[in-house]
Length: 263
Image (cartoon, rainbow, N blue to C red; front, top):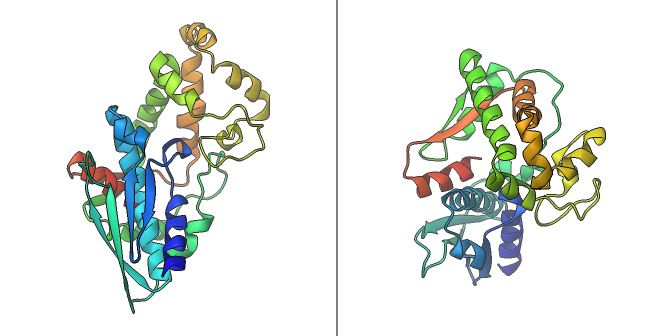
């Protein structure tokens, strides 16, 4: 059982997380896994950071559930979203004869791709199959954007990403997660290596320099933040084979977890 739990825990760590940093510690029991909040997450008072952490936790537990099905176990998940004195979640595992979920095979191959896309759009059937795959995530809908709705979403994404280069606190939050101590072809277990940003080679020295607010501030006055937002948000959305939104009407904390599992 311990070998199975270790495999399940490892699959959880492969889930996406904000800034490539997980917000929990793992406790392994005989037949269970407990996720405790990291000290940093426990002290966090920023609402956005807390929501991002909960989204990643939803993805983590979904990876664990999928991997459990592959090793002949069924997971029962109990959440404690008020974690002042409790763990974030507890997963209890029981032997199961249910078939393995085929999505478990994709856990180790999943990755974030920030490259510009060149290829065909998704077909209606492919979009439908993706939508159907989220039916297991109770309370979450996958909404595909077309025509005017897609154009409006692209403009909003452009404006939001531009703000990250215009406002000092957003700028500092963005660049604090990038590991410029690494080269452009290196990887990292924590935080974001610069190569993962897929910035074109001629632009890399300028982007690194713009990590200094003393340079970014006057450049923003000249409108450079809009150009950076265009490259970071509008262009990838424009080239994407499809553009969709994961939505929920659930209470914020529970909804964040559910959306993370759907993701």
